[in-house]
Image (cartoon, rainbow, N blue to C red; front, side, top):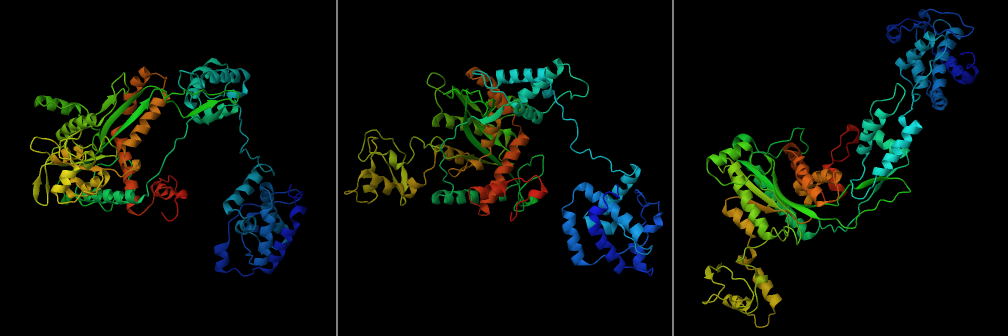
Length: 586
C-alpha cells in the first residue's frame, strides 16, 4: 500500500530529503542524544526489507521556515487516511534513501502532518499489527436501528400520540408521557429482536416524535408588558430600597445558605461574632391559578389543530409568605405542640386559598390581606423570638398592600367642604400644634377648613389644588399604610418593593415552579385544580426557596453595581455551567 501512495506525496518527500541532507549531523553531541527517540521497528511495506530499531536512533531537525509553510499548505488539504499513510511514507522513505546518520523521528513527522507524536506512533503500531493495512475506523458506524424501524411499533406509537397529543378536557401530551408509553406499553407488548434497549429517555422520545411527524408548538398568547424599570421615580425608589436593605443585612447575622455553592459576592457580610440577632426576611405575594391553564407547548402533526379553550376557566388564588429559615411561614409539628402546651391560639400556617368569584368565596380585598398579616405575625413572633431575631416584612406595590387605615391622613379622601361622604380622620400635629380634623359635633372639616386653619389662602383654589398642597405637608406625606403601621407597632421592619421589580421577590419563582406541576396535571376543571394546587406548592421545599433567595440576592448585587434592566442585568446574574462560556467583562 505504501508504494501505491508513493507518487501522490512525492513533492513533500523530496522537500524533506533535501532538508535532511542539509541538516545532516555527524557528531554525537549530548544535544543529539537528548533529542533521540527509541522508535519501534520500521514499518514493512511492499518491496521493502525489515529494518531494526537502530535505524531511527539519530534525529534530523528541519528549520527551513519557507519549506515548512509549503508543507503546511499541502498537509491542510489532506484527508485523514492520507495523513496516516504520509507519516509511514516519511519513515520508510528516509529508511531507504538516506544514510544511516540522517534519520527522521516521530517528532519531526508530527511537525509535518500537524499531529502529536503519540498519534503517529499509534498509527505505525496499528499498521504493523494489522498486516500492512490500517484498521477500519468505526466512528459513526454503529447500528442506528430503533423501534421506529419496526412498522407495527411505528403504527402503534403514531396512533397513541395522535389520540393523546391534544384532547379537549384532558392534559396535553408531553414528551415524558410519550416516553412512559413506550417504556411501559410498547416495548413490553412488541416482539422485538434481542439487542433492543429495554427503555428510552425523554430526549429519545422527542426524537421519535419528530421522526413520526410531530412538532412542538407554543400555544401561549403573548400579552402586553410595559417595562418601567428605568423610569426616574422608579430608579430613585429602587436605590432607596437597596440602601435600606443593605443597611439591615449588614447589621445582622447572614441568612442560612442553600445546599450548593453560593453564587455572588458575599464579601460585604459582617463578621458573625460581632452580631447578636439574625435577620428573618419574609416576602409575601399572591398568585392566581386557572383550571384551563395547561402546558405551554403542544405536540401535534401538521394536519392536526390544537383547539385551546377560549376561557381561562375558574380559578383559585393563593396568598402566602416565605422566609429563608423555614421556607413557607408555618409551624412545625414540634412548634404546634409547644403552642398547645402554652394555651396559645396560633394558626398552623399563614397561607390563604380562595376560590375567587361572585358565586364562590368572593374576591381578595385589602381587609382580607390585613387579616392574613395579623395571623402571619402571630406565627412569625412565635417561631422567631425577638431576643434572637429581627423580622423584616417585604411586600410588592399594589393597592391592596398599601391600603390605608380608615382614619388615615389621606388628602384625596377629603371633600372640599365639611360633612358628606368622607372619612373621619384622626387628629394630627402641625407646626407643633395639635389639629383636629373634625368639628365639635364630629363632622369632618374638609379640605378648605383644614387648610385655612393652617394659614393657607384657598379662596382661588379648586379641589385638585387643595389636595396637592395638603399632600406635601409632613403629617399627610409621611402617613403609612395600615400594614406598615401595624408592623412598626410590633417593632418589626416593613418595606415595599419598587414598582416593576418582580425579580426582587423570590416568591414569584415559587409560583412559577408550582404552576409547572398544575399545568402538567391540568384536567380543565376546578375540582382537579383543587386537588393539584396544594401538592404543587409543596413541591417547593426549603432548600429550593433558599436558592430563590440567593437568585434575588444576585439581582440585588447587580443593581448595586449599576447594571440596568435588560440584557445587561440578565448577563450579570446568569449562571454559566461551563468554564468555556464565561462571559467577558463580567
